[in-house]
Image 1 (cartoon, one colour):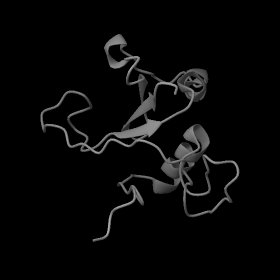
Image 2 (cartoon, rainbow, N blue to C red; image 1 turned 90 degrees about the vertical axis):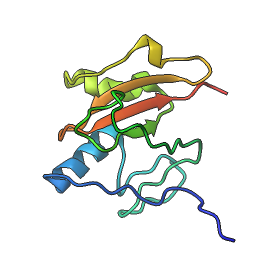
Image 3 (cartoon, rainbow, N blue to C red; image 1 turned 180 degrees about the vertical axis):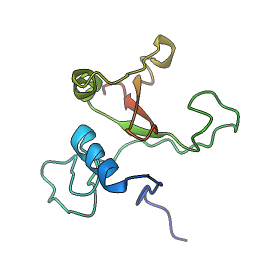
Length: 128
């Protein structure tokens, strides 16, 4: 029996796919032509990621954990939450943090939104 080895893509609708793709590349280093592994070759079609934990979990339809008018929320695993948030702070964009989201056993979290209003949860897992 074969096994799924990971997520091979994330596809979602956008009013302006080109502009949104550029925002993700510029703001977060995510998308085609980006790499999280500086030793990996760059491929214009894929984002080369570094393996690690990934939560795959449906939420209750009435959850208030992310906006009710959105069907999904992407969670991006980061190595330095403060550094990743720096461009958002510099641009004066909204950043949501809550003390109850953070747990030394789970990590630190922050929430931002892309230009089309999609929620993005940033997760810095605990060191070690």
